[in-house]
Image (cartoon, rainbow, N blue to C red):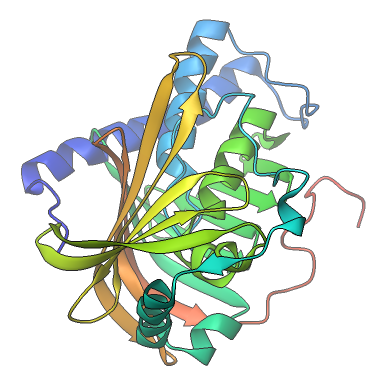
Length: 317
């Protein structure tokens, strides 16, 4: 079970996320912008812009197949595999393969592996206060439409991600997400639960091996160490009792501070929908600090979405 830190802490989280959402709308109103901005950037006062965009990415940019996006990813970050990775075989230790196979079965087996879309509804909290309601539509592996707001109905802000493209819609109009926002989401979406277990571990050049047994988040776990095709290091913590994922940890080098940033997604309160088992609570940690939590109230797999919901909202119809 994931520890949330108590109701008092969660009320504090709620206040900050609500303020964050309001700040984004207010800043746009001050700018008087009713037309879409170009992809080159947002012409905020730099000090104000940095605070607003940091809050937005941290609390409101959730790839709901996985966990919430962390703060700004540096321009050196990449999700591209090394040029020679396609020539290297996938190497999975036999014992690690057995553990991973058990996890796939616990998550739903073929139904989990073949799911095309995931629709979820619930609440989203930040690391310092506040909650917002969200509706999320995900088409695996890299399309997502997230609507969120302080009320269950009439959500004010919509974020769309479509591979290397992205947009944000609110009552003032549509803006293209800047490259840092998109890079941040793509990095975290790459290591979301579904993409990690369905795609990453099968990419040429990937290495997976066992790393013993430990006690993590109050659960006894098997640890599988993974080095993916981009040479990033991932640790997968899997319950010895159920086989279900307890935590995914991964890291990325930050040249600005000349050190590693450590990311973790913590999973709890599993539920089964249409034969597929998913975590209903996901906590996202950055450098051992909780920056967001997702609480799913409902989930539906393999819905057919209307055409164009992940496309550029400003494109001619």
